[in-house]
Length: 314
Image 1 (cartoon, rainbow, N blue to C red):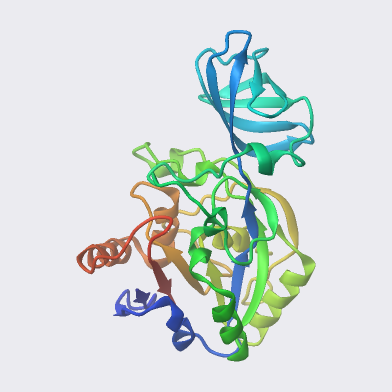
Image 2: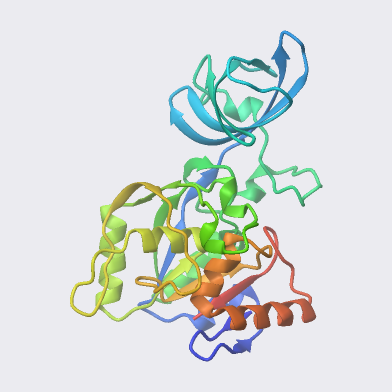
């Protein structure tokens, strides 16, 4: 679905492979190159043998991870023997199901063997090819979920776009599950959004700033790229904002009323209601415009969520 940001209108319906029709030489696609890790682990409590599920969210130190733990009475001090893996120990209760967990050995050498891909709960089929839940440009391991707007791209499509004069650069934001947590507060500003690690390299910042200086459009692929770019916005210089290199956590929560500084266009999938993702899209496209577009999407039988269809907002 192709949308005009200024008018709020649906321009037309198209195939994603026809993306080049809507971009022009000098535009810049910004891709999130994060790679999903096999973050779902299984084990048994020691010494009782009760089953436990761990979902890795964020590495804190070499052997310590912030983790979602599924199981009863998972208090600090509880030990878990992972299936075909090392021993783990709960060292801190972070609230809810969130725990700080220390493993006896670093996981980076064994994770591919003992971990499972953390597919969204609404996907019930077994994923025979884990690469289907990775973008073709995924490079930096660290995410608990895929930046799904990028799943539409193929190497051939990216090559065609670059031959047309569309530039491509990458940033990194490691996606945590809080991205998908529903907003339950009546006032969304009271919702606590947790931090996610992101990076804009000096090289990427230079490419982005040159695009802006030369009048090109910065088009973020996915809400994670939007959040990264807006987190990297510098103080206003003259009449424009520019991007500075950053590395570290961001807790930027984009709601309607937010003034975008860097992003001129966005490619995104259709999101769950009451999510921070649909609120970000509403901030960019307007709440009423977004709701109207979603109604059209339902009428036109668009597919929603991770493996669904996309919208291009320009």
